[in-house]
Length: 337
Image (cartoon, rainbow, N blue to C red; front, top):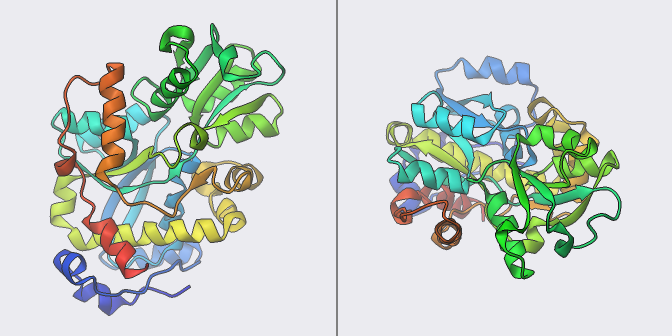
C-alpha cells in the first residue's frame, strides 16, 4: 500500500477535490502507536471522534495505522449510542459514528451536524438463545427481544422482519439494553434474543449460548446503519482535515476487506475483543459486515426516514439533502476508485 503524498494534500482544497478530482495516493501505513504519537505533535488538527467498541466502528483502526498528515484523531469511547449522540449535540466531541435514526433525530432537532461518510453496511444480527425455543421468525411471537433503543436501526430492522413474516410489531416484547449486556442477559435467560451490531452475535455463537436466527443483510440487503456525523463548525473550519479523514477511513475500509485477519488483530485496542471473535464476524460469512461502499446516498437515508415515520419514531421529515455532505466521500472514492 502506498503512503499519502504530503504535497498533494497540501495543494488540495475541497473545491479541487469535488470539481477536479485531483488524484492522491492513499493507504494504510502500518506503524506502531508510539511512532504515530511522536508524529502527532506537528500541528495537526485535533478531532475528538466518538465510537462504540463494535465492528460497525472498525474503521477506527485508522487512528493508529493510517498516515494522517493534517489530522490527529482522539478516539472517545462510549457505552451507548444515546451517550455518544448527546456528547456530539453538546459539542463535547467533534464527530461520532451514530445510528442513522439518531443522526436524523439530532438533525431534526436542529443540531448542527452533517453526515459525511458511512461507517459500514450490514453488520447486525438477530440472535436467539441456543436450543429450539425459537426455530424460525414466527416463533418470536410473545418473546422478549433486546434492542439498543427504539431510535436504532435494529428496532427498524426487527419491525421490517416481523412485517414481512405477517407478524404485528407488538407481537414481541422490546427491552432496551446496552449492547455489552446482551450476551450475558441471553445466557442468563433474561431475554429470548437480541438484535444489535456485532460482535455480540459472534460472541454468543462462540460461547454457545446463542445462535444466529438471521443476519441483517438478509433482512435488508446492504442497509446502512452507523454513519459518521460531524459538527458543521468543524467541517467549515477544517475542510482539508475532513477530506483527509474521509480518504483515510475509505482506504481503511478497503484494507479491512482485503486483510480481515489482520484487521481483527488491529481491532483489539479499540474493540477490546479477542481477535478470533472479530475474525469470526468478518469472515462467517464475509459479507456479514462490509466496508467497501461508504458513500452516503439520499435514497438510503430516505428509506430509513420512511420507516421512522411509519413506526412513529419521527413525526416530521428531515431535509436529507442538506443533512448529507457527500463531497468528501465522493472525492475519496474518485481519487482511489
